[in-house]
Image (cartoon, rainbow, N blue to C red; front, side, top):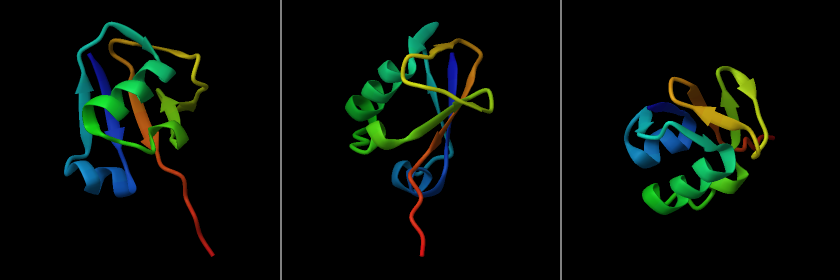
Length: 77
């Protein structure tokens, strides 16, 4: 099981603060694709991803027991 934490508008869009992915292992790219398909998160490709509090690339492998944070792009002025 992979625990996925949601922040900002993602939390509001899905009306929850976390998701659980029932997989033993997947890449960050696989996770983004699953988020787009299962949760209709069209902006998944632009998310910054942290695994166990460290930013990672799309090739990073996520394993059961890891905690993933989805950080949406931030704009400001």
